[in-house]
Length: 559
Image (cartoon, rainbow, N blue to C red; front, side, top):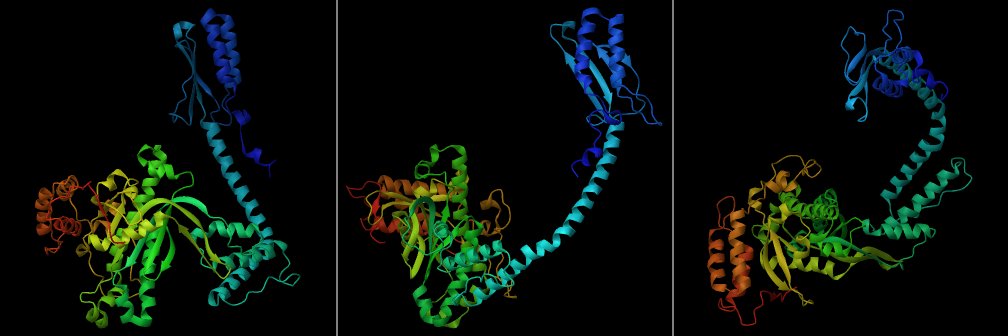
């Protein structure tokens, strides 16, 4: 095949294609003309050049190539083509000039490539047909081997996977050697590897267990939980189902379905936004957004001074983390299955105006990723104060009467456009730390989100997150629907909050009290402002007079 393919190429001057001599010959003619002008010597060289590069009419087809030759901007040969050439494909032009000759004037040769292009196009079609014939024949010859070596072994492995999915705890036998169906050594290796990987995965590893699986596979697949952890940096998100104790007491056996309906939405949206679910702890979920491997804890701590590519990468991950939590809140209200719980008489009697709600906390920092447990049960998870911080932020959402709390370390990673959408609501020292940290929130108005219409449960929730967005906070319908805070509101609250930090609590009281009185939802109903109410409560304890020890932050006494 390699020896036949050159037949379909007219390169190298074959069938009258333009010779490689045009550029070099043009240079030689230029110097000759510049030296002696239109002398017999030049005319002899010109004739040789045209003979090398210009053909004649053959079979009625124009094979002439050079149709115009200009020396130092003087036309020394011209023969009209007689038809219009397409520039760039049929008309080829070479130019040459030397600043030391002919006062820097240009010599030019214009070439007609129409016939060679047409012939090459015909040969390309024949080449394509020839290759298709060869490939079709080869496919037919290899089909039998493909069935024996690939398709049947894959079908066998799919069947084994289905059996495991039906009864994951069943004892799985190893692939037998020497049986009639097990003749390919490579297939036995693949199936045994599949058995080992599946055994590890059934322990509930997930994304955090990739290193554990790799280490165990390298050691022959025997389980060894005593593997050192690895330090990594990521964004940690913690979310919790509100009023879970009361809901559990009412639903009893149905609580699993209730939690799993919520988990499906949480896991799906986090996965669609480049994150992964790590722990499901009853009513709470730990979620992780890993940064790429070249991003260090120093980069996260000093995001503003990072190279642009790292800064953009971190901002993309942080924006997606916040977007996923906003979308989850919207999805909880749009879900047809979860709406059924709001109509459950047992729940509405126990919890008036019951609705499925969650609290969210987001923090960024380092953690140790690894295996926790023994050969009896292993969890692949993360240990660090930063993971605990995300949990404490979620717990504090109840104090601040807001569904989302963000740490200053996380907000520093957001893109500038997203940072403009959040507001700082307090500066505190959490329990177990003496370093103050600023807390932020993202405002959402759930009254703007419509409940689902009656219909089939098969399409009970459709996510918009699988679409491509240039700026998701301005384009994703689930986020746009909840938009509530205007720049004017953020500026007013910012003025009151700054007065609170500065210790001017009289001014802070005046501004924040007006915000509380005037804030309404999309229906016009008065809803107040959770962060403002919290700050007013703090100041009220001191009769709206900042204590002498006030440093602009307070201790958060509750976890």
